[in-house]
Image (tube, one colour):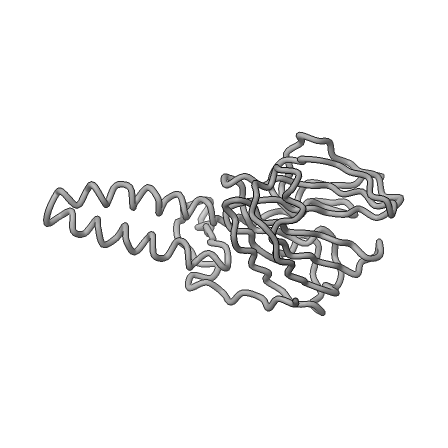
Length: 230
């Protein structure tokens, strides 16, 4: 079924931290769709830290709450990227898990995202989103061969290379995929299109005749790493 885009978080593209550089303060942004996870954690950290001033015993709760809050901010970071060049670029940060020839001539490049990777996914090509479909399924680890039957969101893009399919796959921890755009939306290459909370896997299907430019085990950066080669 079609999926509507997620609304902005309560801190959309906001400055949470900044460091002075050449007269400019760079922003550290938080991914859209992350608020339900990190907002309660940060609130708990703030409250328990304040209570620690009254009673030191609250430190037993404040310390892990602050650590978890810092972890949430790290997990949901959304850095700016200088978009790479190439016909098809990686939609995800992670490691190339497999490269498989498909019966219809396409090649599937599967990228595994760990919980330490940036979770925001980007458009592999410029074009028009023709469909965004949610498919119900399980939640086995994304590196498991049975993860092909996991909860997932299937994207199709109308591009200069024809129809391009991309699949966001949930894993054992990632139980929520948050698309940012609807079908009919025109996107630029490297534009943010969705979020998988706490990692998982993203598959890109290269059209027949397009050679793969990455290898199994290679690290990828969303919006930067080229997946094809001339």
